[in-house]
Image: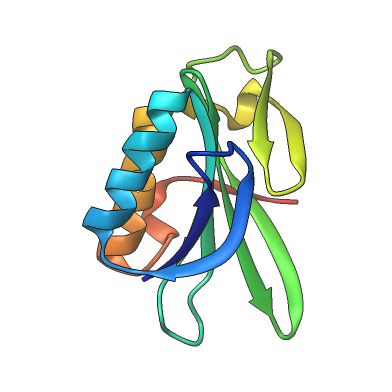
Length: 134
């Protein structure tokens, strides 16, 4: 798989694309969790594979799917798990700073990490839950 993530030493997103197995990505994710926040995007080495990104701060996370459809980039958010009230707001880091999301798209970090692992295992974001197109 290919992935890029928050650098655990600087706390800033590093756009350098890494190639490794899920175990190495999981070790990096554990290090980001120890820092309390981070951003991780993964993709699989197939032409039609979307990117799935996980952003988190503290116990809250957001999962996004980025996909090129007919050369037109599309972005989708995975609907949250109810861990934050629908009208609540949560701020999480991204590639270019922090973004604010309503509770409608917020889930626990464990739930988000499970979604990323399932995407890597199955190769598809379809079974992760309900997606909302932006």
